[in-house]
Length: 301
Image (tube, rainbow, N blue to C red; front, side, top):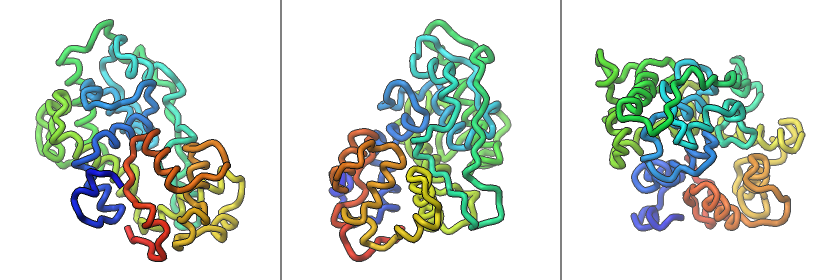
């Protein structure tokens, strides 16, 4: 458990830890953004988001590239290694097999089209963006950020659709955050908006009318079944949400981590070692104590 969370003196559930992280773990949030967008360099500062390009790519990823045409930046700086490579590499326009974006499994839980049928976007033609051979100006950065803000406020895929009732794009305000706040890397306001995107789009998409634990469970068995090349029923009978599945002997976390590419080897590894690997690699704090996983009582999210 991180020192920041432990210092509160409260025994928080994993869900509440994530909410608490809104205020204490911006580095974990930035690590998640970097991982999802597959940036060539780590993102460890809010200032790296100030030209809007990474934020636009993040929305593109978490919406499964359904509205890529609406999420293209107007300006790209050739001096910005991360953004330039991000929008000039076809490999960044497809879902990574190791992405932590939950993709609920092909399972007869509904009659809807499988949520796992993602449609990768076409290669982004960087020529459609204006490439600037120097750092973007304040005006150019704001123009990109305003595309991000407008999409959040107008797209049917956005949980913030219609939240800001204004006529001018520059006046859009989402959860108290304006384009100017993002440009100036306001560390009091911007993380809250980004955590909302993380929570709603990635953990449990709001447009899914499903029990959240069922979705999490189905995602886990789908990830493992794909990696181990076994059918869902076989995996489902093998693992469950009972307490013994989560401890070192149950090896559920190990199997899931292998499936996601977090670890490569099938050698013996404890949950505690795995927590350390995840923290060191993705800067995701230890929301759970190892004792929680060894308990006979499974905490409800």
